[in-house]
Image (cartoon, rainbow, N blue to C red; front, top):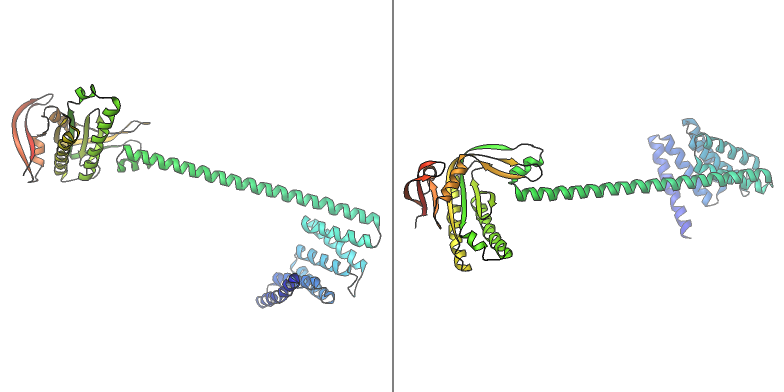
Length: 389
């Protein structure tokens, strides 16, 4: 009952579609809709209405030269003439229609419909007891049907293989993307963000001259002696805790950490983006590092102190290496800052005259140390940086 209702519903839909196609003058649409209406009548066993509909549809397909449409309608007309309930039942006309449909389907290589017409023709010969012809048509029906099923199976297998390749390709893409993102994350951990971006964009050699920077050097006093008294795990844990805090303070004041060498820490203000207040940033960073180390000394009951050196000037910043990238700083300013640290005193910030001249922040004070002989530099006037209370 449900199927009958569905068929009944299709008839007015097909008729509406037919009217629309007639309105817009679509001959192909008209012919197809007429064929659909004929199929609805076939399902309803309304044979007397099908003949003129199929013939009208056939005429339109012949007019527009659609071999598939012509063959389709010839097959439908053959089915109609082979139906004993049809008033115009005529096996000869049915045979002619089926053979004509077969010829057209073979011409356009339409196997799917071809084997169905061979089956209809075989059924007609069976009714007429034309056994030899029945056998020929029935064999063709089976052979072509198996070919179609085999081709469809091959096509499905190819579709599945293509889908598998697409999915595999997408997985590879996702893996490569994940690896790239991981590499990007690693680069961002070992290089300044701006430098990492330039490398990812394909820049091969990075070397930038910065006219005005402030270089920070620090060294933990008594570290060598301490390293002989504690276990490797304790030593590493202590350094990690101290330098992690240095990193946090550096980010707070806008300095770029350059590297650590043993218990030495190097940072710079004024690279990548020009900072007119690079000296103020470096001074504030150094002061916070000193304060942190005082607090750490108390909380850990250790004798550790830090020695800090600061200097201003020009420097070259760049990346060296191909497999293991390293961002570094070169120039006389770097050497001078290192000398300020090594010639300084525990718990104090030792600065050059150039740094004093660059720092204009009134929150800091300079305690003159006088002239001193600095290795590799000769006589230099230096100061200890202090915070104004």
